[in-house]
Length: 227
Image 1 (cartoon, rainbow, N blue to C red):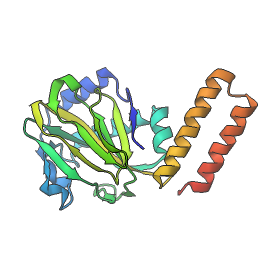
Image 2 (image 1 turned 90 degrees about the vertical axis):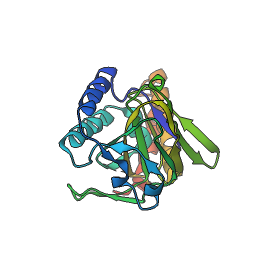
Image 3 (image 1 turned 120 degrees about the horizontal axis):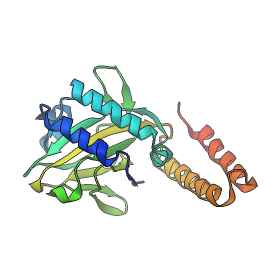
Protein backbone atom coordinates (compact mmCIF):
# COMPACT_ATOMS: atom_id res chain seq x y z
CA UNK A 1 0.00 0.00 0.00
CA UNK A 2 1.38 3.35 -1.09
CA UNK A 3 -0.27 6.39 0.52
CA UNK A 4 0.48 10.07 -0.12
CA UNK A 5 -0.31 12.44 2.75
CA UNK A 6 -0.51 16.14 1.82
CA UNK A 7 0.34 19.16 3.94
CA UNK A 8 2.01 17.44 6.89
CA UNK A 9 4.11 20.59 7.23
CA UNK A 10 2.87 24.07 6.32
CA UNK A 11 4.77 26.14 3.76
CA UNK A 12 5.97 28.35 6.62
CA UNK A 13 7.30 25.32 8.50
CA UNK A 14 9.04 24.06 5.36
CA UNK A 15 10.69 27.46 4.86
CA UNK A 16 11.91 27.42 8.46
CA UNK A 17 13.26 23.87 8.08
CA UNK A 18 15.13 24.91 4.93
CA UNK A 19 16.60 27.99 6.59
CA UNK A 20 17.94 25.90 9.46
CA UNK A 21 19.20 23.14 7.18
CA UNK A 22 20.96 25.55 4.82
CA UNK A 23 23.07 26.79 7.74
CA UNK A 24 23.94 23.30 9.00
CA UNK A 25 26.90 21.01 8.27
CA UNK A 26 26.26 17.96 6.08
CA UNK A 27 28.03 14.61 5.81
CA UNK A 28 28.25 11.68 3.40
CA UNK A 29 24.86 9.96 3.26
CA UNK A 30 26.42 6.51 3.24
CA UNK A 31 27.01 6.71 7.00
CA UNK A 32 23.51 5.37 7.67
CA UNK A 33 23.33 2.92 4.75
CA UNK A 34 23.69 -0.84 5.01
CA UNK A 35 26.67 -2.51 3.34
CA UNK A 36 24.75 -3.22 0.12
CA UNK A 37 22.84 0.08 -0.02
CA UNK A 38 26.08 2.03 0.52
CA UNK A 39 27.30 0.80 -2.87
CA UNK A 40 24.47 2.63 -4.68
CA UNK A 41 23.90 5.61 -2.36
CA UNK A 42 25.24 9.02 -3.40
CA UNK A 43 23.90 11.98 -1.39
CA UNK A 44 24.56 13.99 1.74
CA UNK A 45 22.68 14.13 5.02
CA UNK A 46 22.53 15.96 8.29
CA UNK A 47 24.56 14.02 10.89
CA UNK A 48 21.86 11.86 12.50
CA UNK A 49 22.99 12.55 16.07
CA UNK A 50 23.42 16.30 15.63
CA UNK A 51 21.33 18.76 17.61
CA UNK A 52 19.89 20.18 14.38
CA UNK A 53 18.78 16.79 13.08
CA UNK A 54 17.23 15.78 16.40
CA UNK A 55 15.38 19.07 16.86
CA UNK A 56 13.95 19.02 13.34
CA UNK A 57 13.07 15.35 13.74
CA UNK A 58 11.03 16.10 16.84
CA UNK A 59 9.15 18.74 14.90
CA UNK A 60 8.38 16.22 12.15
CA UNK A 61 7.00 13.72 14.67
CA UNK A 62 4.85 16.44 16.25
CA UNK A 63 3.48 17.27 12.79
CA UNK A 64 2.70 13.59 12.13
CA UNK A 65 0.48 13.46 15.22
CA UNK A 66 -1.63 16.25 13.68
CA UNK A 67 -2.36 14.18 10.55
CA UNK A 68 -5.34 11.81 10.87
CA UNK A 69 -4.59 10.43 7.39
CA UNK A 70 -1.05 9.46 8.40
CA UNK A 71 -2.25 7.80 11.62
CA UNK A 72 -4.98 5.94 9.73
CA UNK A 73 -2.58 4.61 7.10
CA UNK A 74 0.36 3.80 9.38
CA UNK A 75 -1.25 2.78 12.70
CA UNK A 76 2.19 3.61 14.17
CA UNK A 77 3.65 1.95 17.22
CA UNK A 78 7.22 3.32 17.11
CA UNK A 79 8.72 5.97 14.82
CA UNK A 80 12.45 6.08 14.16
CA UNK A 81 13.98 9.54 14.68
CA UNK A 82 13.61 11.27 11.29
CA UNK A 83 16.74 11.82 9.20
CA UNK A 84 17.36 14.47 6.53
CA UNK A 85 19.07 14.14 3.17
CA UNK A 86 20.04 16.32 0.22
CA UNK A 87 20.59 15.42 -3.42
CA UNK A 88 22.48 17.82 -5.72
CA UNK A 89 23.20 17.51 -9.43
CA UNK A 90 24.46 14.01 -10.20
CA UNK A 91 23.41 12.56 -6.84
CA UNK A 92 21.17 9.50 -6.78
CA UNK A 93 20.29 6.41 -4.78
CA UNK A 94 20.19 3.22 -6.80
CA UNK A 95 17.71 0.40 -6.44
CA UNK A 96 17.76 -1.02 -2.90
CA UNK A 97 15.64 -2.29 -0.04
CA UNK A 98 15.74 -0.79 3.46
CA UNK A 99 17.20 -2.68 6.42
CA UNK A 100 14.66 -4.84 8.24
CA UNK A 101 15.67 -3.49 11.67
CA UNK A 102 16.95 -0.04 12.59
CA UNK A 103 18.61 0.95 15.86
CA UNK A 104 19.15 4.42 17.29
CA UNK A 105 22.42 4.85 19.19
CA UNK A 106 21.27 7.78 21.29
CA UNK A 107 18.02 6.35 22.62
CA UNK A 108 18.60 2.61 22.26
CA UNK A 109 15.37 2.37 20.25
CA UNK A 110 15.16 -0.63 17.93
CA UNK A 111 12.31 -1.04 15.49
CA UNK A 112 11.17 -3.45 12.82
CA UNK A 113 10.89 -1.31 9.70
CA UNK A 114 7.38 -2.04 8.46
CA UNK A 115 6.96 1.25 6.61
CA UNK A 116 9.30 3.77 4.97
CA UNK A 117 8.47 7.46 4.82
CA UNK A 118 9.78 10.28 2.63
CA UNK A 119 8.72 13.82 3.58
CA UNK A 120 9.52 16.21 0.74
CA UNK A 121 11.08 19.56 1.68
CA UNK A 122 11.71 20.87 -1.86
CA UNK A 123 9.01 21.91 -4.30
CA UNK A 124 8.89 19.79 -7.49
CA UNK A 125 9.83 22.79 -9.66
CA UNK A 126 13.03 23.33 -7.66
CA UNK A 127 14.75 20.33 -9.24
CA UNK A 128 14.71 17.95 -12.20
CA UNK A 129 15.08 14.23 -11.69
CA UNK A 130 15.06 13.03 -8.08
CA UNK A 131 11.86 11.01 -8.40
CA UNK A 132 11.32 8.38 -5.73
CA UNK A 133 10.58 5.20 -7.67
CA UNK A 134 8.85 2.43 -5.71
CA UNK A 135 8.37 -1.05 -7.13
CA UNK A 136 5.58 -3.40 -6.11
CA UNK A 137 3.55 -6.22 -7.66
CA UNK A 138 1.68 -3.67 -9.77
CA UNK A 139 4.79 -2.10 -11.33
CA UNK A 140 6.90 1.00 -10.72
CA UNK A 141 5.48 4.18 -9.19
CA UNK A 142 7.21 7.56 -9.47
CA UNK A 143 6.60 9.94 -6.57
CA UNK A 144 7.51 13.63 -6.51
CA UNK A 145 5.34 15.57 -4.07
CA UNK A 146 4.90 19.16 -3.00
CA UNK A 147 7.08 20.37 -0.14
CA UNK A 148 5.47 19.47 3.18
CA UNK A 149 3.80 16.32 1.84
CA UNK A 150 4.92 12.74 2.42
CA UNK A 151 4.65 9.28 0.93
CA UNK A 152 4.28 6.16 3.05
CA UNK A 153 5.10 2.72 1.59
CA UNK A 154 6.17 -0.79 2.69
CA UNK A 155 9.83 -0.85 3.69
CA UNK A 156 10.10 -4.23 1.99
CA UNK A 157 9.65 -2.54 -1.41
CA UNK A 158 12.54 -2.11 -3.81
CA UNK A 159 12.96 1.61 -4.42
CA UNK A 160 15.38 4.22 -5.74
CA UNK A 161 15.90 7.98 -6.20
CA UNK A 162 16.66 8.92 -9.80
CA UNK A 163 19.68 11.16 -10.59
CA UNK A 164 19.29 14.90 -10.08
CA UNK A 165 19.92 16.86 -13.29
CA UNK A 166 19.05 20.37 -11.99
CA UNK A 167 18.64 21.96 -8.60
CA UNK A 168 18.58 20.38 -5.16
CA UNK A 169 16.18 17.87 -3.61
CA UNK A 170 15.87 18.02 0.18
CA UNK A 171 13.78 15.60 2.22
CA UNK A 172 13.28 13.90 5.54
CA UNK A 173 13.27 10.11 5.56
CA UNK A 174 12.52 7.63 8.30
CA UNK A 175 10.86 4.34 9.19
CA UNK A 176 8.20 3.14 11.55
CA UNK A 177 6.98 -0.02 13.16
CA UNK A 178 3.24 -0.36 12.82
CA UNK A 179 0.89 -2.02 15.29
CA UNK A 180 -0.23 -4.01 12.24
CA UNK A 181 2.69 -5.96 10.85
CA UNK A 182 1.16 -7.12 7.56
CA UNK A 183 0.56 -4.75 4.66
CA UNK A 184 -2.77 -6.36 3.77
CA UNK A 185 -3.98 -5.77 7.34
CA UNK A 186 -3.04 -2.10 7.18
CA UNK A 187 -4.71 -1.74 3.78
CA UNK A 188 -7.96 -3.30 5.00
CA UNK A 189 -8.07 -1.24 8.21
CA UNK A 190 -7.20 1.94 6.29
CA UNK A 191 -10.02 1.41 3.77
CA UNK A 192 -12.45 0.69 6.57
CA UNK A 193 -11.41 3.77 8.53
CA UNK A 194 -11.72 6.04 5.49
CA UNK A 195 -15.19 4.62 4.80
CA UNK A 196 -16.24 5.25 8.39
CA UNK A 197 -15.01 8.85 8.21
CA UNK A 198 -16.91 9.43 4.97
CA UNK A 199 -20.13 7.96 6.34
CA UNK A 200 -19.79 9.88 9.60
CA UNK A 201 -19.54 13.13 7.65
CA UNK A 202 -22.75 12.37 5.74
CA UNK A 203 -24.79 10.55 8.38
CA UNK A 204 -23.32 11.75 11.66
CA UNK A 205 -21.03 9.89 14.05
CA UNK A 206 -24.02 8.65 16.04
CA UNK A 207 -25.61 6.83 13.11
CA UNK A 208 -26.21 3.16 14.00
CA UNK A 209 -24.30 1.81 10.98
CA UNK A 210 -21.37 4.16 11.61
CA UNK A 211 -21.22 2.97 15.22
CA UNK A 212 -21.37 -0.67 14.09
CA UNK A 213 -18.58 -0.21 11.54
CA UNK A 214 -16.49 1.61 14.15
CA UNK A 215 -16.84 -1.43 16.38
CA UNK A 216 -15.68 -3.70 13.56
CA UNK A 217 -12.68 -1.40 12.99
CA UNK A 218 -11.59 -1.57 16.61
CA UNK A 219 -12.16 -5.31 16.83
CA UNK A 220 -9.88 -5.84 13.82
CA UNK A 221 -7.22 -3.70 15.47
CA UNK A 222 -7.72 -5.67 18.71
CA UNK A 223 -7.28 -8.97 16.86
CA UNK A 224 -4.23 -7.98 14.80
CA UNK A 225 -2.35 -5.40 16.85
CA UNK A 226 1.11 -6.24 18.12
CA UNK A 227 1.80 -3.93 21.03
